[in-house]
Image (cartoon, rainbow, N blue to C red; front, side, top):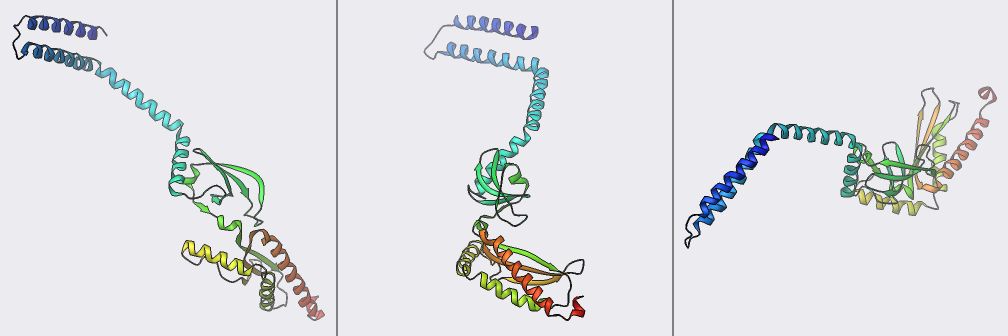
Length: 271
């Protein structure tokens, strides 16, 4: 501090002396003394600045280091918030989803009801048990998950869904492939009321994505479980709100047909 004050005092005195001497010079039409006075002022001011930098350079280095350390600590402390802003900007630029869409973020499914710079709020939809109904829970997802996880837009599933379920029975002496033909007929029967609308809706979805993603017809696949039981996997494209009811109807049809076939077997086989 003393060296800085001494530098400033000496510089001011030198400037005063130089300017005083220059003012004694005769003034001509070219105003040369005024130019020299202005140059002297600028030179002295520059000298003061350079001198202060030289004197304070070590202190400034520590100050800059302290500022850098503070900035790094601030970034680390607010890292999650910064990532949330980045996620919000990424979503805004890519238009991954809008309010009202059904989406999947990581293991979370739901309808988007609100989106801000920090978080996205979902009404949870039960996809895991395939009821496709609201659970009554609200999920507040930090926007950094929009970057860290894959975001799937499931909006088409609000109206129609590719529903799949399994029917498992003991390995009885019953031809499962015969039951398969019966179940295809039952699916056709139960799908008659919405089949045309589902076909048009499926066509719209496939036109948007450019490829055929959804099988055009219901499928019934026969397989076995790890325990050796017979398993029938039924997949159909149906209205989301009717998926559970259709599953129950087809399950009922399967059970009735199964027991009818079981009763036809000789008693020695069924015992």
